[in-house]
Image 1 (cartoon, rainbow, N blue to C red):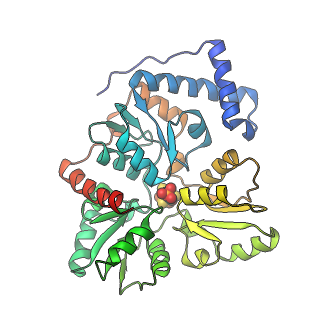
Image 2: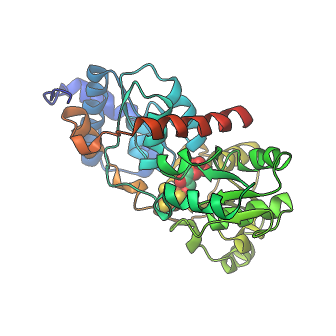
Image 3: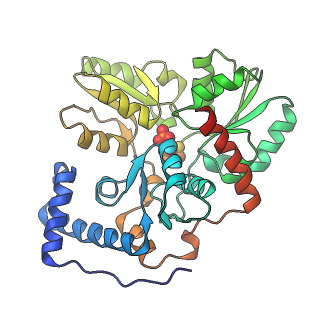
Length: 346
Ligand code: 13P
Ligand code: SF4
């Protein structure tokens, strides 16, 4: 295990500088009273200090709390961007702010680094919906079909698949694979499978075999809200994550992954935007596009919100065994192959 470190203490002037840095980063727009901003600044200062003492890097998914994103993250992104950047990092320690499948992906791609997940219990309803053994059984039921998994899966599931995809590249990769295979087993997200099958003109049950997993955040949004909000906010552009239901996705202006949604907002001009996804994306969009108007419509992911500054500091001070990502090497090597297929085809 790593040796414990003493908690560093900022001087009054270092604390003042950190408050100013957080204000200018965008946290100022959240209206924190000065005592709360000071307590946040003390934590972010200590974490950034510990990070350099440990030679650690902090990647954060865009759904993470804004004080993590603006206060301590070295890079942020969607699942695809984080997988790529974690594979490139030279730091010795990766403290992953996100959920387990993302931290596992970092370890798969960069096995010589020590990867820690501060919220060690942070799963994902999609990743938890199936096992590697379930993929083996599906492949036996559909000989000749190629197995593809969404990145929201365990290392064991990835190891049983030919290719991994993320919301940012699923359509492109499946399209390429359909040039070579008649049937694709796409797991574990049933709603995403239906959305992709529709986009690609394929039929579930015939060309695409789906699993029963869903995201507990995105499957809750109701399609009937879309028309109501269009009436209330004329000209609003409505964007939804591809994990939402097909009935909702068919009514929105754009669907894609979180990175695609941010790029859509950046490259268009509309009276207002509604981002139908986890609340963190809206918080981030408000700080990144202060001149644009966002109509709130979101749900919290309990897994994504399990990480906070205290838990990040605790991992850096004295990491617990349960917080480190350890994978079976045979599984890791197989999973790395299917992730590499994604990087080659994306
Ligand atoms: P993205 O890859 O689009 O960021 O999605 C990750 C996720 O967990 C969505 O719920
Ligand atoms: Fe998993 Fe849904 Fe949470 Fe994303 S938002 S981590 S898919 S449960």
